[in-house]
Image (cartoon, rainbow over all chains, first blue to last red; front, side, top):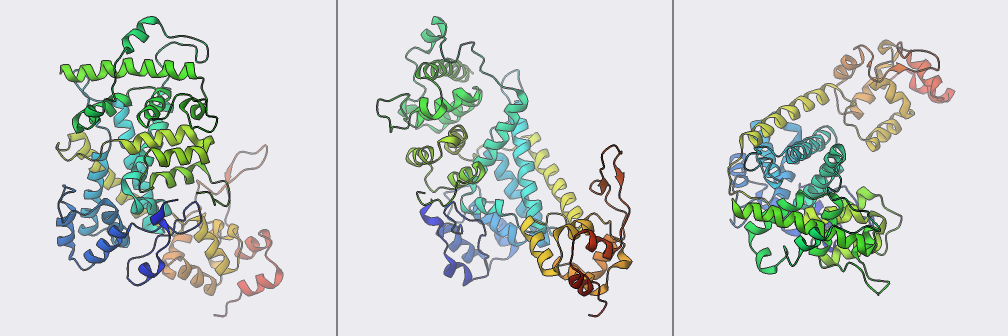
Length: 278
Length: 193
């Protein structure tokens, strides 16, 4: 599917950096993005200390920044030497990046720990270790995805961990409403009102976006999906039978989707107001 | 995407979507059209892909530092365990490949993994070939096989009986139980290198 994922065998076989083994849905081998492949070739000759110093750079805007795809590739290339300080250094830098990419587990106000985020965070980290462990003794094709697009593959790991944690917590919609026929109480519809959490001006602000996603995390799964599809500008329903709609994708009536949306808006408004008040 | 040869699994579809260069609205719509049965998971993933990126503004909390430490310790323990067990982390593909190169059914390798073979009954050339296939030394393989049978996997289950640890079996008997032909058995049991 991805245009850059066709196999670049000539490029890969001309140097010591190994090719990826995972195949795309079309049956071609995945390849690293060209920028990652060239960077790997250029850092191949760096001494361990030099590479670690560059991998410790945190700003993506820095010219010497090492993307996580590249950091992981170097870590995998050294997997047979996992007892060396170099490998440990690489591991710790990569772990820190993973931990920082996850929703914070430190809560707010009187609730110092967000238990759900804490469970998700631990689940993601230990699943990643399991992949590294498999890779150490043999070869874990699952890690190939992380070399193609690290943030995307990590997002998928996070989604899977969230699904497991939510299932264990038996998260259900907190608002009582009959999915197909019922109406929300008028108070909820009024509270949702003209509130627009997706004002483009606000969404451009990094701080607001982080607050919004933290608030979305508190919603039940069905409401989260509705919110994500609204954010991506999918219509709730359509007269065009070929249109991809929220109602059709999630297998719910238009009325139910509107109820989910209104209930979600009420929760988001309350959560965002709390943030503003603090 | 239109030339997908077979119906891919949910995991394959999600992984493919996750590494798309531009997993925005258009890409999500394409995937929802192609794989409507996976819509809820695709939308969940889309939300995760849209989440604001890594923030290095704040310092790590104590619990995050502890997690990194403990994950490193767990990784070291897992690697140490794997290095002692030549069969751990062998992928199914690799297991198939090793079995094929040794000309034995996979269940023979399972018996070796579970250490239910009498080591002294295995010809040295076979052990040498096994060691080379697993990228281990001859002595490492012998030391592994001489340990007690693995209680976790060598339990024998029969109807109306409590599970019991299976006793070790002669190599030839394992080959017979696995249905290895007479000719192949003679070849596998040869002591000539």
